[in-house]
Image (cartoon, rainbow, N blue to C red; front, side):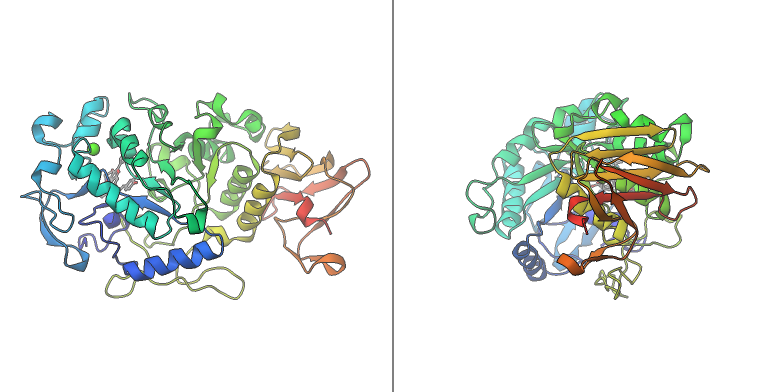
Length: 445
Ligand SMILES: O=C(/C=C/c1ccc(O)c(O)c1)N[C@@H](Cc1ccc(O)cc1)C(=O)NCCCOc1c(-c2ccc(O)c(O)c2)oc2cc(O)cc(O)c2c1=O
Ligand SMILES: [Ca+2]
């Protein structure tokens, strides 16, 4: 536990053991949650912090009486001892911390902001990490986000990943492998690049959220119509390797630098537009962020809603499906939830019928879906657009849900009619709360 600042969100990123006990609950509660999710087809991915242990500043008792002593570099609950950490000699800097991000050895072999740096070249360390991840696989976890991958040697990380057990046949079928995402913060300018990690699994593409934020904020003369070729040609990973997101737990708190460009739930209108585009656009493997409101907003350390002991609160679900208790639950917002269904439905289809004019765009996904966005600051987007969809009436999944089924299906939002030529009339005012429409063949009335 970190008490100063009080139970910050990043406490989770300073392991004292590989026990599955935290302020989020016990191992049994975790195992039970994974089981319940797998039963309904919801896969669980674990954020694996395997580059380091805690900061170098003390002796302490972590959760579940896992003692540790950073002066002795000992974590008996694993156990790790001084031999399992990169020495100052191997690191080579005066402080033992990373001092120069242009030195690839430092970035891997030195301490990231003073966090004790594990030596993954040691078989003892590899074995302990493998046992930790295999334990999670046994519990039914489908894969991992590998935190701070930039700070580990790709071949050592790859060796660990390849040594893992197959996923349990009961939940995943025979011979299935953990789905791995590596976190590599690379927005250009450093010798270590995201391309070094594509042999291990999907890799975070941080440019994606930065650029999408820049375009939707209309900064630096960016316009929505430039998104027609949004993808590898913008300096991003090939689509099949990219893990994309509008924002993440770290950069949604950032101010200054690229951080101001990132869109977050604090700006819901434009955030929903960027998510709608991301989910309709065929590039990358997309992640929808789910957050909590923190106060004061300037305090970038504040942890999740918790009781007086610091234990994370459960998430209350309101009657309308939204979350209470300061949980933002962006993934439950109608516009975002429905665009996830849109993405899954149109999977495998190409972008067709692109139309773009300044900050207004529209495009189809094969003959299955159609999205139009008006991000112009004043002009209404109106006219007849070719949707590629069969003739009929469609419920707009941005403004509403299609409820009921068969003949008594109805739309709680706007209904659009597509004529025999596949064309529909659009009228999106620029001052609309959600200036976009999205229709698809599963929302045909
Ligand atoms: O802001 C934070 C935490 C940020 C953070 C946490 C998890 C992540 O996955 C991440 O990407 C960032 N941490 C605060 C507080 C802090 C925590 C520990 C510490 O020893 C000192 C301070 C902070 O101000 N951190 C310094 C700037 C952010 O520097 C961190 C980075 C980081 C930032 C930019 C990079 O290009 C990069 O390669 C790594 O990764 C972490 C990974 C961790 O597993 C744990 C960390 O403490 C950190 C981490 O401090
Ligand atoms: Ca390291």
